Length: 252
Image (cartoon, rainbow, N blue to C red):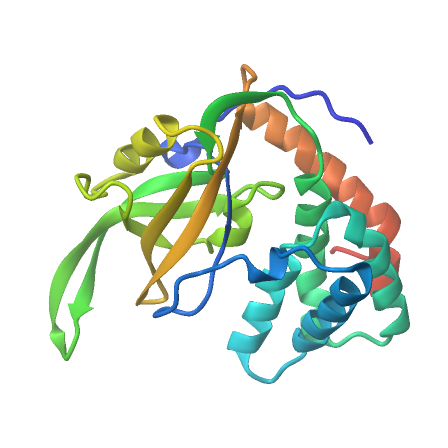
């Protein structure tokens, strides 16, 4: 399915589209892309089966980690994933719930587009004005200024790195800049070249952690918002044709 690139953001929430290639791990550990290491076909299939099985784990943290790992699959892995799902029937509710977003993202991550040299994350941003409890004293609060990840665009690596609601506080490579608003993060990303690796300190579910992000290339088109809408429609068509029949009728 070929796609003609068009599109850039026009955003609610003063949204700003960006994209990046990352990976995340629990709070005190720097996120790494170990699941994207070059593996043999057999090793990749074993890893895929392990991650897919973990989508049914009783611990939600294990399910989340498995979903994050499956998001690192490449488009060429989708036929093997299809076969794995066929062989794993019946699926658990948590497996069924996770599959749509994984498949659409992996499919679109392999979709080509016209690229510029500027960095791109693939997220919509807003500014955080929240207050959070001071550690050890729930009655005292402190401001948590930063850039909120409002929404993520499938097919770009920001989709893998972040969760909706994450707040970006700072970037290791830019110690001179404190992220106080969405504009601060936007400026750093737009002034960085595609392929730049950034280590971002974020807050997720009230816990600080670091994610490592390799910026993708910003689409070199007039309207990124329109472009991403077209891409998402293509991803949805692929899901409905290839994978929805495996999960009892698809999306409702």
